[in-house]
Image (cartoon, rainbow, N blue to C red; front, side, top):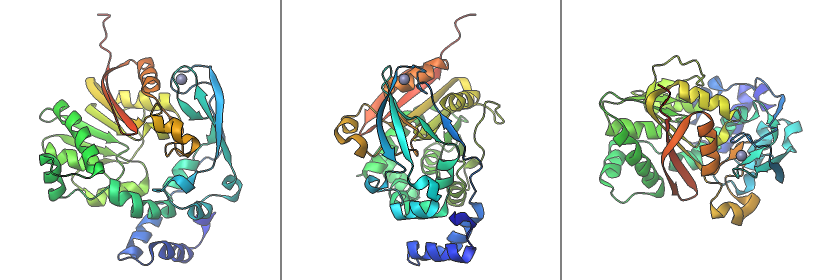
Length: 337
Ligand SMILES: [Zn+2]
């Protein structure tokens, strides 16, 4: 595995990738200092739908490990080969569909494989060049002003604006907000700029994203541990979970952890690729969201509803935008008393 190689050798590899861009050397040293080895590579599998628990599941298709040739934002196939152990390179993952809620999910995977790959400096070095520059642009005063006045916006900026428009009215003075899976903190920073009195937290467990986010936006409150059902933090008024849930293997554990951090009258907003979008059928296994095992599942609005209802949440709003949807949930009031 490359992680065991010497620092000099790694720097050589990154130098090739970055083509000696400015500031590269320090960036690479920082990346490597936070890189973590995989803890557990044992296998784990689902016997029922992770969203609705139905046993009505059937084999749908198989995909090779990280279908990277169509994934323009990711790292190159060559880089994956550098990162991943030989034994995983030829791995094929079965994708199963649920007849009840139409979710697609990976049947079996290796426990820490994805977090290992995603926190690998090579993976990140490629992503940051292509994807970060577009999706995770630096939040400057000028960007905030343009988004606030709805000047001509790029599609990515327009999407952030739509989400801000739905979230900011939910926040009162001194409200507590957390972006769960905040990446480098782009949305959290935009929100903090619009709502200076909101207590904005950004939770990110990928060490490379975390370091980058803390450097970019030191004014945010960064949470560097995964949430668990034993909340260490005061509960939040709004939890924002964008393009995270499709990566989560243990969905029940994740939703329980979210609930432990949500006020009884709080809001949970989830955005994720839309498994019911026509592109999913049209493009089949070439559809961008079917990247396994990086996406453990692709949900439909129905599958997200079924998951949330099982945990006592009710949907109060939703919208489909492009090839994703977002949905807003609240804990169902306890009518027993
Ligand atoms: Zn299901």
